[in-house]
Length: 65
Image 1 (cartoon, rainbow, N blue to C red):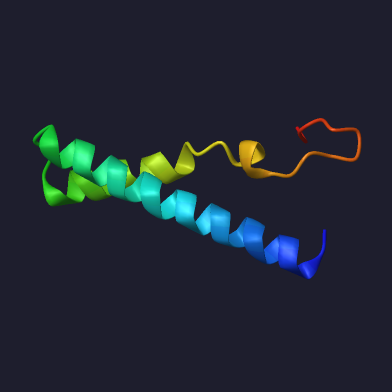
Image 2: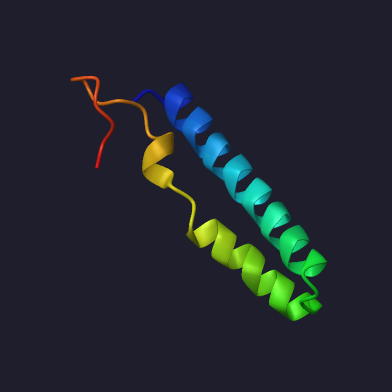
């Protein structure tokens, strides 16, 4: 993986984490959880991200994993 590809992958992972956290927090807050509970839900949303889906295909065209 080239440095440019590595940077793009890192940026995609960061963006996905931020979006998952925002969505997790919003859904939890709308469900009536307190701030602390919504923060925990946002962290859980990040933990549940499918990182393998973000990886580029291997040389044989298949996803790693």
